[in-house]
Amino acid sequence: AGGGAGDEGAAVLHDQIAQIQVKITQLQEERNVIEGELYEHKASIEKITLALPALDTRKKAAVKRRAFKDAARIAAEIKTLKANKDDETDKQDQKSAEITRMTTELGSLNAEKKEKEDLLTKAVSKEDERRLEMIEKLKANATKQLSRASKLPEGVKEVYTKVLTEEVEVLSAEADQIRTRHEWPSDFKKMKTPVEEEEEEEEEEKKDVSEATEADDHKTPGAGAAAAPEVADAGADADAKMRARAAELQEQISNILQDIDERDEAIDIAAADEDFDKAAALEEDNESARQELSALRAELERLGPLVGAVTGEPQPQAAQPQAVEEEEEAAAEKGPALQTADAAASMMAAAEADDKEKEKEEEEEGSE
Picture 1 (cartoon, rainbow, N blue to C red):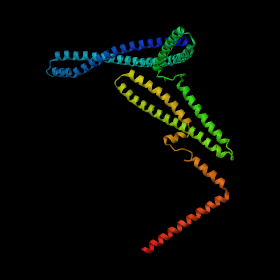
Picture 2: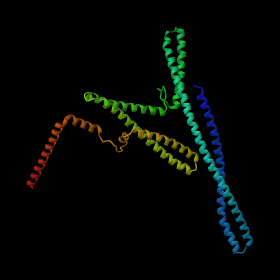
Picture 3: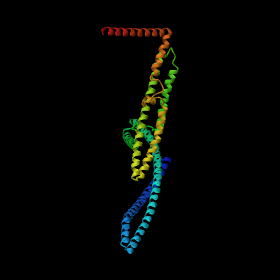
Picture 4: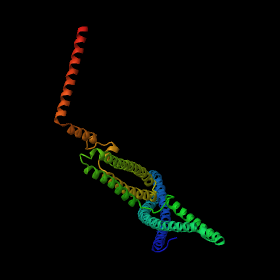
């Protein structure tokens, strides 16, 4: 596998994560012990609380029958129990505060561990990416050498072919392991990070829109008929890509919001059960999801008015800007005379419709 500074960095992160996990495990064990002690204090307080009313009743009964020695003994017992209850209550408060402190510290340790794990994942991914690229180059070189093996003498050719074939098999197996570990596609050549993929998609969209706009700007009256289909196709392609991307973003945003809501419910349940480790881990997942959500919403805003077409929100443009533009161009080509003729024809048609309506009304009156 690939070596160097990347491996050293991954090894350091492995050690740091292991050290943090040791602290987490030790702190959880200490907290479990204190929680057991806290339970004992609560049980003792509850037992004393239940015993005091009965003793007070016995004391009053002894006083009533003037058995003052019995009353004094019971009073002393009540005083001792109250003192014990106060002591148990103080210890309970101390244990509760200690558990709260440990829970907070565990949350910080878990957050630190997750941060290190994320860094380790990136480091391992980068190293595996480099190794996979190297494997593909080695495989290509071995395949190329295999194609030349036919020119070698028979005895040498068989040995040479066997060695190269085994090398390709070993390299392919290692490549498959790397792809499986990261769920990379089988046709991997050079992996891109999510940020790089997003930037590349944005560049492609901008390029498509720019080409469509440039073709439209350079369109001349004489060449308009020939250039219009090309511009329309380019604009339609860019529009379709942006709409598809907007729909994809909407779906991702909806899924993330749903996941956040589900984790919020799980956090409430975990907090009620005092499973604060689980609550902290879920909150960290939600924080990461919110950051991803902000990035997706920012990209959705950059797509502009097309978002309205996907989401169903009202858009600032007219419903059919292309149709309006075509009608205006057609009117301009007709000229004033043809426009006047069209208007006159429209007026005549309207007048004929009114006459027919009046005739129909007169016939109905006559029949009545």
